[in-house]
Length: 430
Image (cartoon, rainbow, N blue to C red; front, top):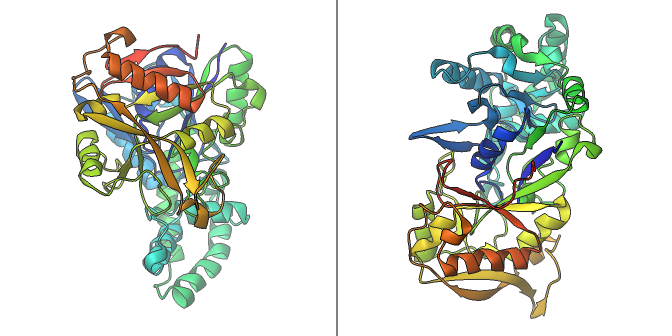
């Protein structure tokens, strides 16, 4: 039985939600393994648009088990609001289809306030954080000062930890950031209300997942953000605070590396990124704006306009290498249908010398110059294509060239936002 990891192969926002939604049909368990509600997956089901931030995209399919793993940081208010909305729309009919790891860490009000205050004081050195407390929560996890979901469900343990941690957090807020202190009583009362709701979904998800895999069930591991935002392998410090690469699927869920059979990287037919940081192929002209408007490149979580640029094969090859990709799902090919010619970055130069791989040093990455190859466009609406042969010759040539440059098979091509606007070239579930 195949178990598949889906990762972003660029800077996030590649269209993972749609691909996970399609692959969910073949899986039994859908596992979210990292990140928080700074992620946003937009799905189009029929004529309805559904935006999910925490709950795995598989929740839109009946009979599937959705797991939010230990590698995720959970904002209880956002989670409860999301399940309430899904229940009101009739999309959650059975609470047993959704499980929360007892070991995941909980985002607290002081995490969000510290996040926002730090960013406000960063001036021109802003990271581009969403202000949702994700980074400060992961800091506390690594610093062994975090509050886990199991702690929240134990009133005595929660009260003791909250009281202890607030001493430090209020010192930081008041003395370092010039913000008012957080109230123990207000947080305790608010979060005990959350605990009463969350208790329904809490489980030892690592054990449950292990039993399912041993029983021959198939798992789909769903990541958030993208490879170049990985805290270890991304454009540090302009990264998120978790392991977005394929390795994070194991540490963030409790699954074994030996359980993983396929790793699919999601990549747009061009590139976008949100927030600060190097972006060699960024287009700061009318072409970039055309990509943004045609592709609807505005954040599902924040609404922020995304930076847009041509496809970057250096990024693609890097994603293939650090994730061990067995396939690429190419999204938004239809967005390029308006262009007479399309550029593709085949490599970088720095100070006149060609680079073999992405530079780790930020000061070098920021000064890299893209080397472009120009390909003919197809100037034809491709949203009705349902097989590869139905694509125009130039569109097929473009896909094959990206495949060649990335050094990895393209297994899916998306030609529109709907589920049916998809060309499956190879199903990783076999």
